[in-house]
Length: 102
Image (cartoon, rainbow, N blue to C red; front, top):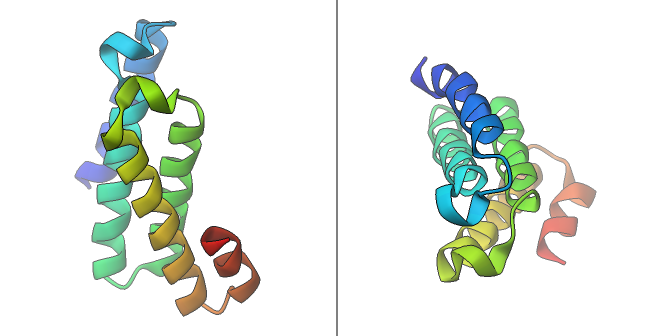
């Protein structure tokens, strides 16, 4: 599927950008990709895959600097955490769910 097909291209772009995240914003764009992909998987009721994609989005956000991206970064970070919390709760992972709302 297209969500998985994009991943090697983002990985390559991250290697190519080096330390130029403020210019190319590859980690941020990769996080956005994982967020959208996770939402698609959630809509398709593929909850475990959705959680995996959202965890990947969180990891990419953790690898970038929030203030470089401004409000878009913080909005995406909030959305990722909310979705992780909601889906974790829906799948019975209540302790994990509460961590995202803390």
